[in-house]
Image 1 (spheres, rainbow, N blue to C red):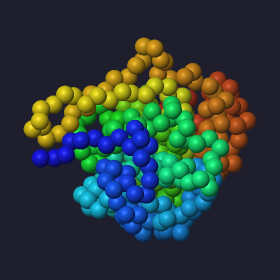
Image 2: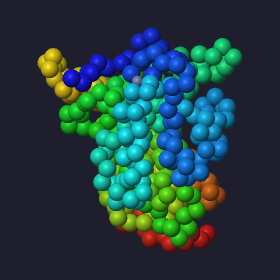
Image 3: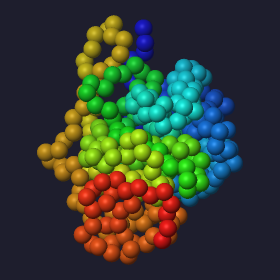
Length: 330
Ligand SMILES: [Zn+2]
């Protein structure tokens, strides 16, 4: 019978190199798994590529590993990485046809891996972060909620009628696409994006698909299309900004079961009565986000807000239809 016991590392803040991040088993410091799958490091030549951590220290993709017991690694992490690797080799269609729950788990592992690394580092007396995550109860509460659903990686779990995230998959037009790989995540807003060859996956974790609904019309326009990288940057800005103003955290409840159950069933609730789901849209804040994403093209906020009512868009025209951009010229 499967082990349906959930693990809660947040109760005692059990973040150390001696505990499996996924099940809590005591392990040796040699038992680890890479945050970024080895296949990805190999395929996109990431081993020595540098990564900036929250505390501004520098690490590399190959150095970024988290404590993981042999069983979790062999039974849960490696098979998932294998499945994503195969899909990535098949390109856009193959990635789109993946079970969204698997993509959620895969992205969630990388996101949570960065978080775990931060929490372990904060325990080091030599590391004195300015704003330690471990002392921010609101953020810890959110991470704890997130880890509940991430455990679907290990514990057989059915999400009753929701996915604990919004997922977008878009593809780049090769004409001016020079980036084989790109990765971006924001710990506080739980926005994430990763580029595997021509395919870009953008995700907002822990919104139960709400942002997916809000951006559904735009997302549908991109389906089957090849977008110019500047259009993908704008798409990311829209998702990341929506994540930034997203204002609620879902609750997840394990449905009471029987002793011989083979899986957990999770229900969810979002309190949208006492809280607005989104904070008000702020054009200037959005322009900042877009400016940040458009950095490679040096497009500044002033240009973005030339028409203050309607920020600059490379994705849609005045009628809300998808623009075609093959080459970007200023
Ligand atoms: Zn484990």
